[in-house]
Image: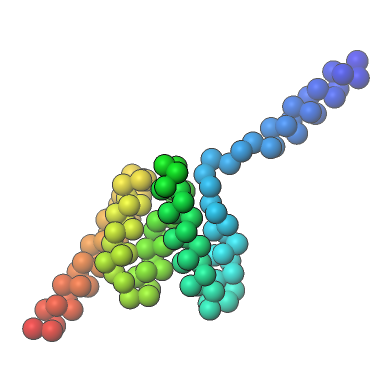
Length: 120
């Protein structure tokens, strides 16, 4: 009788220990730290670069949004070409992000074109 009462509780608690679907590499803590202290943005960028490289090397899928986050950090740092490359990777890895990533890429390309025309 006691076994019948313990078994459902054990099964319910065992379901809470399910493995995560993606490896985030401490992204959430690093992002929070960079929001709290903007001088830690460079540390976030390095952490994302390292984590993404490790995931790609081990042929694992990079978690959704990580390519885009790193691309945005590059864009803010003044490297739009790297941002476009990472936005393209995000779009290819996660088709549901296609609309947003395409719009981001087009905005960067328009901005680059405007700068070229203004320099003429």
